[in-house]
Image 1: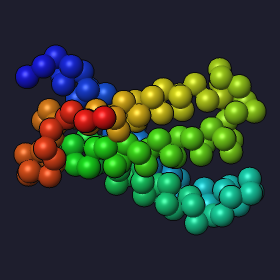
Image 2 (image 1 turned 135 degrees about the vertical axis):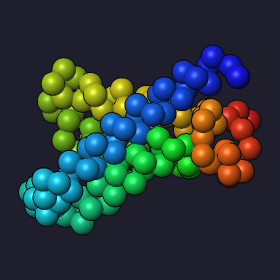
Image 3 (image 1 turned 45 degrees about the vertical axis):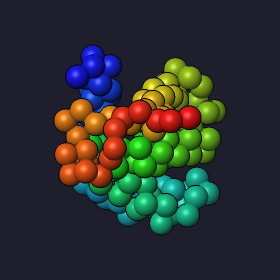
Image 4 (image 1 turned 60 degrees about the horizontal axis):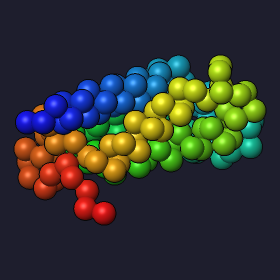
Length: 133
């Protein structure tokens, strides 16, 4: 076991928990309200459901280490979308600083993957954590 794998495991779990809690919050506080807010900023309301499911289900998958790279790509797309549509005008501080951090974490895991304590790896769904570029 490499120390870098343990570090990536920590990133994977924190990223997964963060997205899971954001998705859970969307459903607990009324996903229809979020859909209405999406409509109010010019986005189709149904995207709120897609984003919430990506966050909720993807968060669980990320923590468990199932589909880490694919889920990371979806998280990255959600973050880019949030920054472009809402956060950029607010500036870095009090705007998109958290989004940049979550984007960087997502890209790191999309590039490297992480098989340490990964259910996906244990089930034989991944071959390893190295990406051959």
